Image: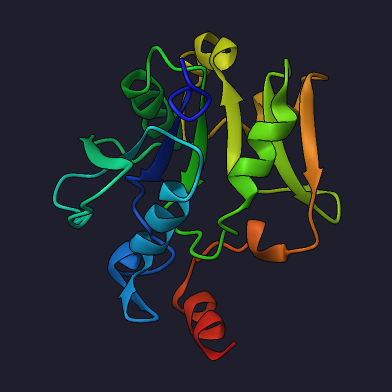
Amino acid sequence: MSEIAAYVAVVLAAGRASRFGSDKLAAPLDGAPLLFHAIRAARAAPVSRVIVVARPGLEIGDWPGEPAVEAVRIASTELSQSLKAGIRAAAGTRGVFIFLGDMPQVPHGEAARLAARIGDAAAALPRHEGRPGHPALLSARLFPEITALTGDEGAGRLLRTREDVVFDEVSDPAILLDIDCPEDLARLQKS
């Protein structure tokens, strides 16, 4: 399997956006829906395809070219269910990059740096000033543990308990920037 075919990107976009008050992933940023920025970052990763885990009715757009973008629809808004759906859709790969649909400014080169660092580790994460961010690169050996997650929680707690996680120390705080409320988006649009 080639290095590029070894990984798949998963964009998690099935949440409620309750703090935002409306469909935040469709909210415009720089002339495109917020979600499209996360998909662009995922397509820039060294992956063979991009899987967008989305709630029914969420527009993910038409993405001609490579890597292919496909939707996996789920009704649940729990983060654990979205993550598990993405992992199931990526079965048979060496690992997955996890992108969040509400993180529009993830640096496009970060995923390649993580792929270069992971080696035999269970996961590779970017870290800014001691705080881990996204994308997260999860090796396939974590998939069984991820299938046991429940509730509105991702893999963060699981990764914090492991010693076989490597970090890429970055100076760009964009790996931490997520949009939770309209004020977050307004601040980003002004910068």
